[in-house]
Amino acid sequence: MTDAVKHRCNVCGSDDFDIIFKSRSAQGLTSLCQLRPGRVEVSFCRSCGHLGTNALEDVEAFYESDYTILISSVDEDQIYETDGDTVIYRTDHQLRVLQEKQDIVAGMKVLDYGCAKADMARRLKSSIPATDIHLFDVSRMYIPFWEKITDESHWALHETPDNWAGQFDMVMSFFAFEHIPDPAASIAHVASLLKTGGVFYTVIPDAFGNIADFVVSDHVNHFTATSMTCLLSAAGFSNIQIDTDIHRGAMVVRGVKSDQPAVASTPEPAQLAALEAKAKEIAAFWDGVGEVIGKQEAVAEAPAAIYGSGFYGAYIYSQLSHSENVRCFLDKSPYQQGRRLFDVPIVAPSELARETRTLYVGLNPSIARKAMAGMPELSADDRDLVFLT
Image (tube, rainbow, N blue to C red; front, top):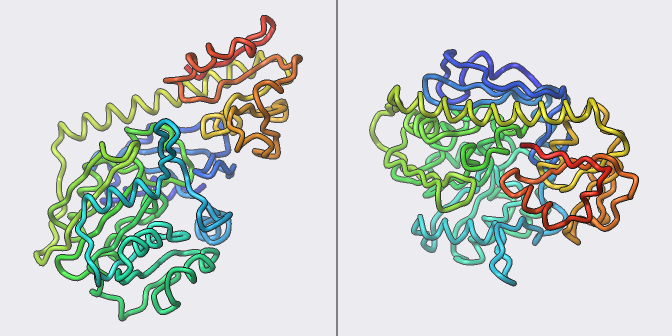
């Protein structure tokens, strides 16, 4: 990972920042649970309240070929929540919120920016067939999906055609801007593509609503309300609206391209002080997690296992100095069982070997102890259960 973020804030360009977190391990964990070399360092900007992480060294190659999100099939999606027997997928929720926040009518020219396989564009066009959909991303691996949505004249890779400038009624972007090392340049690009009065609509992680986002190595931006407002206002957007409640763990942001000169917003000192205090609380949490893992590993007996094959379980694995001692991941989900994570098998809890001496609990700390209390068979007298807090 590079040190580029240390020289200036990704959003406002200020060099007035403080490095508030350094990971214990010399490797980081991406949002797709991939291990990448380099420590994760997070800085807080005292000028706009932005949180930035040092960028991956080979960021262009990573997104061109390694960031393979949900490409097994057209319909592959992530679960947003369950309601009884009803499963609500993330794209369904995002489409509902988009249509609640923004009037979309037939004939609107819409660009999906950083679209990956363009799930949202596909769903929007299915909902309103006359929408004039365009696509933009930096990886050609998604072209087979785009071909099912629109023709080649309506998509672009790496750079947009000159004739797209000032043509769009709306540019939408879903979970993309957290990955972009220079979001100021990208938002200026977005503004250049919109008509005056056009709308930029984006959904991005909320670092305070989902603390796991803080240590994701490919999320070089952890936007706050003040830094996002600064970013958009400096690019000439007005009527900026930010909703941190309607999408769990995310910010839904909407801004309108103004015909007035751009004026960057300046947060109040009290706002910045409150944000810095909250950010340092999260940093202290992850420092504590690193200490727990380090101290336990120093005295732990092999073999070990990790309960949970999601982000928290993968993060534990990424922080271990002797990950070869981990024999398996445990997961109750039948969809995970039988798979491998870091070439380690994922098995049902009932398959945990009796001789396993250490069981790291890789669950969100807010639910971890209650979850394990419901599985007393995992708490053998001679087995150490290691909780993150």
